Image 1 (cartoon, helix red, strand yellow):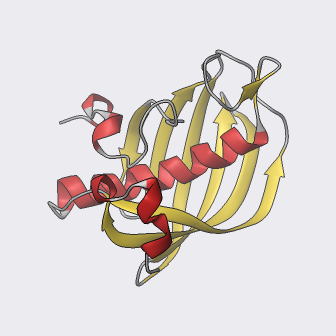
Image 2: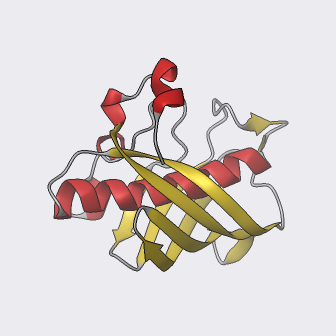
Length: 156
């Protein structure tokens, strides 16, 4: 199966309208790339632009796609829920416009227990528009087990 043929909703714990990536372009243990065309209906669009919060969530969902792909296709496990643990050195050079294609790449820097540290960048064409380091904490809870009411009971 080609990465582009994977249903992104099948590897993400997020559901519409809170999905900020369209396709998985590449995934291995070290590097993951996703694509997203900024949609005017996205909840993080404001004044014809994808906001800072949307860019951060796009990076986090690229991390989630990596974990979901590895869980589902390599480890034959369920999709688990993760959270942003920390963001460092966030630099946003410009906000993308509706209709622009974002290519987001994360590179795994360190992985210890249920914590993953990545370096991330988002490009439009060859133009770098955002970068950061992000720490993701992954729980043992399957994404379908978690409701808003149960978030307080998560141990991580």
